[in-house]
Amino acid sequence: MTSAISLSGVTKRYRGVDALTDLTLDVPAGAVYGFLGPNGAGKTTALKILAGLTRPTSGTAVVDGIAVDVQGAHRARIGYLAQDPRFYGWMTGRQTLEYVAGFFMPRASAARIAELLELVGLTAAADRRTGTYSGGMRQRLGIAQALVGDPSVVLLDEPAAALDPLGRHDVLRLLERLRGTTTVLYSTHILDDVERVSDYVAIIDLGRVVVASSTSDLMRRASGGRIRVELVGATDGTDAALAAIPGVTEVVVANRGGRETEYDLGVADGRTELVQAAVMRLAADSGLIVTGNRQESVDLESIFLRIVREERAA
Image (cartoon, rainbow, N blue to C red; front, side, top):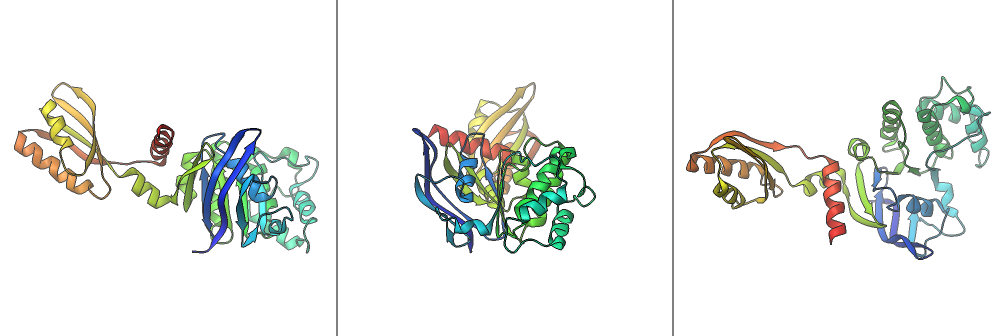
């Protein structure tokens, strides 16, 4: 698989503070890649290094086959959107893109600018002053200006942060439309956004990559599985019997009240159906009544929290 972005052992120190530590990451060409982490994790620093806005203390970065260095030859291949972009409020959206296009050789044509305005859904507002734009419209205009130079890699810093639900929806839909036409690496701390639009995700915490994977593999591997079991007549001995079932990794008593006890079982990857069958056999052998035995859905938020907590506890 061809990598459009490669970071190898990248470390960045600011006056004794390690913003990034030995960060290594490969982003496949044409993918929408979510760079996920809490505020202060180092996401913005990594994007600034890739954009050539700051230099790493050590390590190497490559964008579209070109090393990121002080000469900045790679910059012709990238588009960059900083967090919370601002524009000259007296310019229209069209004039803003024409102004940005003036920095490129050859300069983007009027047709290309019209195409970008259509792509980001701003054709109707193209000749309005940007000072009248909503937050979501500014973000979409920001993505359009990042695309003016027809880059092979687009770096977006928190493109959906601080937007209302409608603005977030519009930006995420735009990211989906970019899939396959360019490589998108975007940072975010909003878990739902990554789950909805990203082909791949890297979780970063305290300047380190904790895990990097395709989103689907992460959901499958990291979650393993959870089963909610509800039994009538369970005792303390039932707790131990459930824990002894092959494939059960954790037994949590979610509620023990009245006749019915609710259990939350952690299950090893690929063992869900076998554990469910074993629960039914256990109930039959022990004279218990099964009122629930279902697989629980696991979202990215629970996976993220678990991975970060485990990393910090290590």
